Image 1 (cartoon, rainbow, N blue to C red):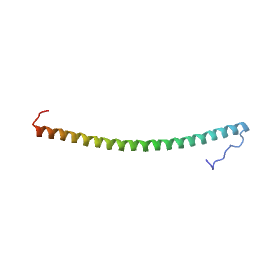
Image 2 (image 1 turned 90 degrees about the vertical axis):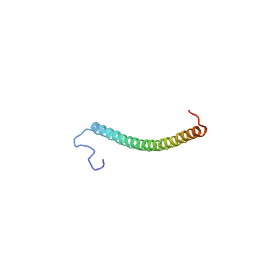
Image 3 (image 1 turned 90 degrees about the horizontal axis):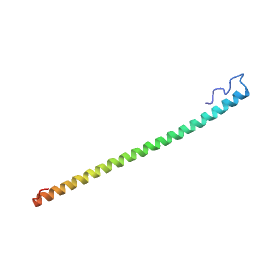
Image 4 (image 1 turned 135 degrees about the horizontal axis):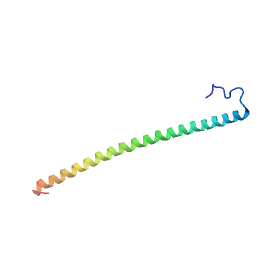
Length: 83
């Protein structure tokens, strides 16, 4: 924002105030935008952590189910029972 002239020659004092208000509003919006971008980045990081945890839990659940299935099949073959 720094190098451009703030006001055009021949503008009124009221016009200059309006320009100042708009510039201040623009600054606030830029700051809000930066804060929101930081929040979005943080949310994506949290989402990635959740995805990793979910993958890990799915893997552990699959292992558990396979072990249970093996145990049940092992019991069935030892006892000669049908399920």
